[in-house]
Amino acid sequence: MTGNEGNVQYMRSLIGKPTDRGRWGMTPPTSNAYYNSLLNEIVFPAGILQPPAFSVDNLDAVNYGAIGVIIGHEISHGFDDQGAQFDAQGRLNNWWTADDLKKFQTKTACVVDQFDNYYIEPTIHHNGNLVLGESIGDLAGAKVAYLAFQKAQQKTPAPDVDGFTADQQFFIAWGQFRGDEERPEFARKMIQGDEHPVAKYRVIGPLSNMPAFAKAFSCKADSAMVRPAEKRCEVW
Image (tube, rainbow, N blue to C red):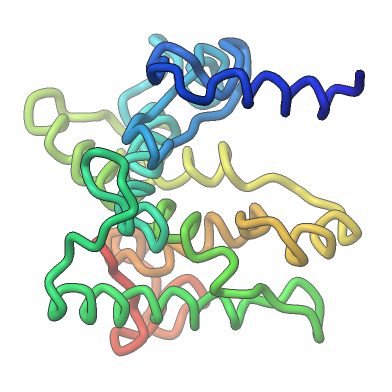
């Protein structure tokens, strides 16, 4: 029996049985996380609660900028283009008012357009619709983690480190955690079917929409890391 056959047999054995909410879709040492819309659950295995995503020895700016954005990302999956189609009980059910749904679709169209215009080579660009869910997660995750970091600083102000302000440290942490270097061959493969953008644009994409980033690094209005106000995307 192949691995796939075994998996199919196992999944079939679950039919008609009560939902086991203690069963994970990842092993504990896996360095990843996920949101399951059918169960309305979020899972963070122990494997991702390690450096560089998280450490009890990290400054708040680093933890909020890394694992904080990841946590916000997974929460936001419940309200991305796919998760928003499921209600609180995990049922595929339209719970939106017609007006709210229209506004939501307008906001997500901005993200689609943004990523349609991210090229990995002169003639090869992302499919904005394909990466929409993950890009909403990154955009909303960065925003909510930054807001949480600002709230934390009201109690415990974060210090400057090596000439970098607390806000700069926050954004740098996301870039260091998420901004992997990828070979051109791998990037070409990713954009054909992976719902995640290449790592470079998982950093550039959301942060270029955040006025707080531009302020932190004193970016000029025509900077490549600043989207014009009329094109700035904000879903949540």
